[in-house]
Length: 271
Length: 339
Image (cartoon, rainbow over all chains, first blue to last red; front, side, top):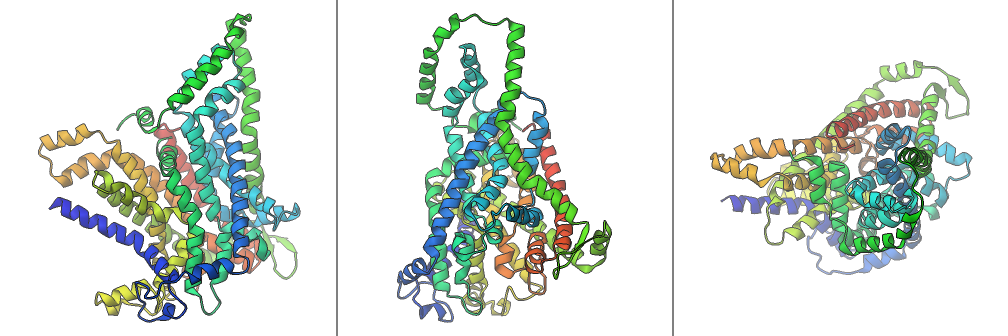
């Protein structure tokens, strides 16, 4: 009896999670006529990949894709490097003000981005960085660094101190111990953190909407709204485009699922 | 509860053996240095601390500088701007001090935004926690194909918020959407709506459902991790005392994971309060402002109405609210010895 209830529960959960995906896929596979059949057919009668081809050939779509890729990869690399040093400094080095600065990092992790969008827009404007990739990347680095430091720190605290101490006794400097001993051990943590930063930057919407003013500089999350018409939306194209946006994150997720989840559970819950 | 250190030890996939030997080898290369004269203990420690201070600032400096430039200076700017009245027509700023805030408190917009924000945050967080916990309990014990179900269930959390919102826009579509089709199919035609997102009484709840769907996997993953750390012996002991399933849930499961749940609740409250794109893409804050929360409203008045002064007042108020949550969160991390 209990196992039946459990099976029903699991099925309901899957239904709740997957129904929207199923509808997205079904719509993406429908031809232009079948899209507007009422009531909607659940299984497309004449499945076609037309929508995917259309979406990709839509002016700018591949451009948006490359923009997103460039911004996301630069952000991920920069944040990872800055956060690796930051995390090491906050966990292993003793210096004046460490506790205070670490609280600032934690506090910034939960910063309300909407509260700074006007001033940030004007500051970047004064620096001539509005509508540039550099401006968007800098803004992304700003709000991702705290999360990066926090996640990496949780991996660092699980690396036993003895290894470094041994290296110090052997006569290594702290810097050398960091490079030779700690960095290699942090590999999986760095991977998980980078994957998380990739996810967050790939989907970021608000800053991309505000800072990228010209159309060919837009990233995917904003660019995909091109498919939403003022009066009528081409749902087939829109859903096909959505699937194209999702694919890169799914691929990364499949490969890094374990590390990512380990990183999140350590970072947010255990610390 | 298990000790935090113990949990870390169990969850971390320890250093791989190969890299450990690499490290050993690299040490061997430096053994000749041992012959060098060692500084005396006292000098050594002061030297180490001196190095630490310099190295500490060098290592953490970049993070702190970028936070100062990208978050704290803009926040200061926001606070300053909130004391001015700005006009869209010309760039004349009139200093009004706190009167701007008083006006905002008197006029209806602020309270509507506060109520919407609280309703949106509370409902989304409650929904995510309930479904997340239920999901975690369903998936905690092994069954064939569990790995697949687990991976599938996390998907909403992985996809971009904009895409999630677009998917749900289709679901809520009156003619093409899954929701009305489903309600018709199961014979609840009278529940079908002409326009789920166009009805001021319904729109906010429609966005809430999307918010729950998008974010609940995070709570589920966290609860699963926490459930995995509940010692088996507690359940065995409860079994021996003849506890019924509900009692086991109430007296073993709940107390064991409540720490984690509380931390997660704070964290997702902050995220949800700050969430922009679901509401923006689904409703743009409409109809008639019934779904505006702080982030969407601030965007609206700064980048559509260009009223920077008023936008900054809302920004400062939302900053104060979020900071309250953040401080609670930091205090929790301290009290559970995570920092």
